[in-house]
Length: 224
Image (cartoon, rainbow, N blue to C red; front, side):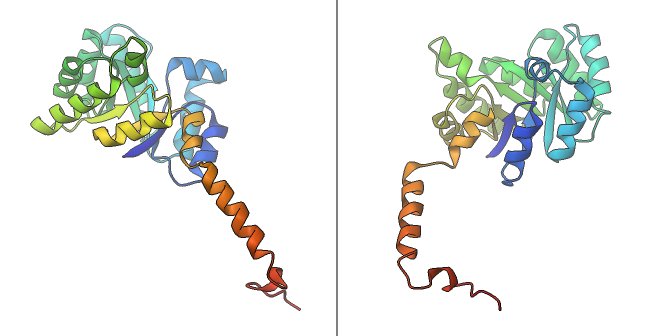
């Protein structure tokens, strides 16, 4: 499963990218606005840090506007993926852009039928919002499982991008459900490699090592 970071903060992206674990980044108007930076410059900056897919969202609500904005976004960097909402206009824009060779991430997917229609129209990604479904008492991961099954049944090129990931357990569940990608905020990503027993173990190993005579030179002798 690929791991994307859901942020427009370049410091968070650089720190995660340094670990070699980030395959892409998703942004949205809210994340861009939070940074208070020029939209184009910020997307291009992110694209230069992470060579994988970088989602940049259209703002228009009509299909003609989405297509126009999507074509412009696609010129900003070769790894830009255009985001469009799962509305009738968004689905129409997805079809047009996909037919022109532009990768589209259909976002705000909350049902299997929405995901099916987006896949039929050539979506590169479909983004089910797991956490928001959980918020209203539904099982967000059930949608991920259903979408993966539908895509596999019909051989769509579409990838399921599990979004609105809130906890490490969401990440585990997405991986078990067969999601192709999980996108998450840095706060969640930074918990994935942490465990208190790892920290305790390192402390104990180092304490034991220091009981050796001349432990500082036991492996790496000092040069004269």
